[in-house]
Image 1 (tube, helix red, strand yellow):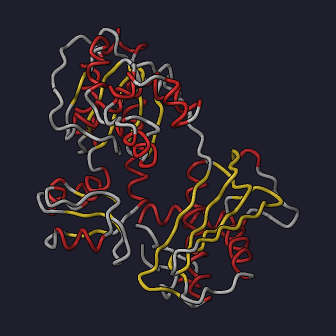
Image 2 (cartoon, rainbow, N blue to C red; image 1 turned 180 degrees about the horizontal axis):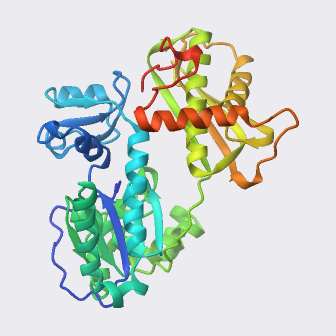
Length: 408
């Protein structure tokens, strides 16, 4: 989802010249919420929050009815409940969102082969090669939104521009459920009215540094001497932001994006001291991680764990595997081994997580002498059943008492 700041006073009409704007940024609107509404249409029109269900959970997505009450993604759920007590809260269902995301990306890939998936709900497209077949970029954007509405029942916003940066910012200003074209000749005028936070690479720390020198808009960055920016941000960041501020962004849409790692984390509703419960959660997380690896057709060469104490002190441990794997048995064995030597913190655990790293294609599988493939076949069968009948329809026997389902 786009997190680019939007300027409410920004123009919504920059003309219709899309002759030099082959880059589209498609951003699904309130994606998690819309996926849930497609499955539960009786909730449409009500304030809806998707996120962790414990008081320590956070908001993953909120309907526009909830946003009108001040709810937003990344907000503590406890605060969101106070701001919008009438909201319906639904726990996240990443299996559902992953399945819908694949259908969304299939629609986009059917429009053009030059597609760069950025996240589960957004992607860049270069439509240069399909203009003769499908028409102008604005026509293609309308086609995409129409297909997503008709085939999936989902709204999307599309930004159209000559560069990836401007297309992404434009899609944020097209929300909700709209299209915004920024013609090539209007690029600088469009950029220079925006806050610095709209640019890639400008997070809270960089934003504070720029503000300390009086730079609050992209125009301010553009007219700041590069030498001054170097002293503030360093050589590389200064050159990068200065170029972007003048609309210079040569990055192409790349058709392949390789996942570097996959994993999951659990924040407990109350601090946990029980080592057996931690082990059960690690096993549940290992199964979720292994399932994702198999979906991606990837193997993990390294397993990492993340442990956060009640006082927020965080420890991370990792171990390389003798052979890459995509089975929960192997991942859980390493994850439990990494945590076994660590004493439970005095205040207990607040969060634990498992991550598979250094991913390689599944074609690089190396079968061990004692591995006849039955473990992977069994876990693959669990995947198929859970896809058909819902998450956790089949679970390891040690998790049937629900101990591994520790909350969000």
